[in-house]
Image 1 (cartoon, rainbow, N blue to C red):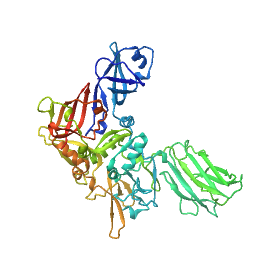
Image 2 (image 1 turned 180 degrees about the horizontal axis):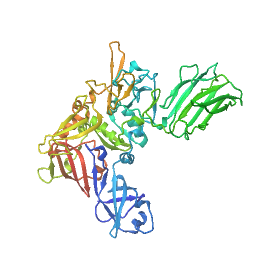
Image 3 (image 1 turned 135 degrees about the vertical axis):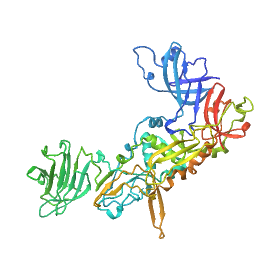
Image 4 (image 1 turned 90 degrees about the horizontal axis):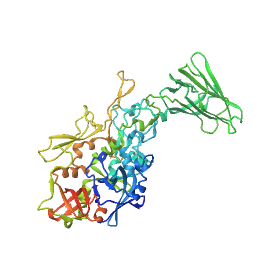
Length: 592
């Protein structure tokens, strides 16, 4: 058998020992524990060629990136290229240079797994949140997305629109697409995409985002008597508000910190000639005027200012701003915008609701795992990223099975090694949500028929509180009335995950709401990919046998396709292959 290893497009000198390769499918594996296929350590002899290709790695005083980074390699067997790999130089000795190979995983997906990013870093947007906000059923341009979908918030929000409106909900599929786009990879969910698109994370908090720490109001007119501006609020923050009750509107600002980094952005379109002073901005407190700033019109009659607050306000915490114009309002959009760099308060109703900062603090990898567990999906590497598939996909592919019957190297009438356990299971394996004292348990479990295992264990626990508060599967009770019944207060009801359910009334009118009913694990363990998963682990039968696999066999391995062995009259899923020379030791899981 001829083996070749290429580095930088040039073949290296290999020693006499054959290279051992480990092919891994990650079948039924935890996505956060996915490992690439790899080689055993390869010792390259100390030839001049190898020293040059590895850039003199053990010469003191010489520095090469190959000492501390992965580099590209190619592996050939009998003239057939089996794979492209990432190689790493492990160590050097008088015997040679110790190198190892890894392959079979997208670099970008490995980066995703290694990053410590939270899903809060995605969905970087804000939605209007005020008395004009309407239910959009999550539809944006005909596609399910982040938006406002009806659910029970704990109080009747529809009859209290002057006080509060429901929070937005984040579409899980759109969030996954944003994550995939950020890493530049493909996450192929196959036919399960249609189900994931119905999953939503209703946002339960009201955390501000510094990116949206601004107050904004549109200037809609000028009062003829006082020449004061008339304002319509566009975005609100807690410490700035518009004074109402007059034919003009002043602005009240409360600030207990430094005024240094506050900014004012003012644009007022007027009918003033170019160069004329047209706008006056005055700030004052209860006792005296603190400052006046004048703006001149440009050639379009527009008065503009953008920069730090043009007043000396140190030592003052409560001020009032009055904007007046001696000319009528022009046709260009006019506005006033004030930015508070130190805002830490909750989002103010009447402005915008930031999405990312109000998502649960869950890592990207854990979020993907949670979606996989809800549907019984497992990750398989594809050229552009990763494909998520249920175990049933392998079972359904029996008609495409590869016949390994004549490749088996028999060691007797039975397999070389047989075991009756697979993975880290107990007899009863629970799928759980966070407990909800106001709701019945939503947990479910799978059974493994093996009395030698532990009685039970928690296999999966999602960080979402189980739904069904007081029997209402549409409840996400993050609102409550204050004790005196006059104001609405925020209640910590735990992070939630819900499903969009669409129904129609007797007149055919569509009604879209969030519901938890179908997400209870006792309902799901017998459905979707979890059903075939349960069947597979119920009575596992795992064998290890030796096969004569050619370089073509190894090159064309597809973990989605089972193999058939006539000797056992059975189909098997490939778990791993340890290949050295002409022989390969294979670990296989029997399919039902």
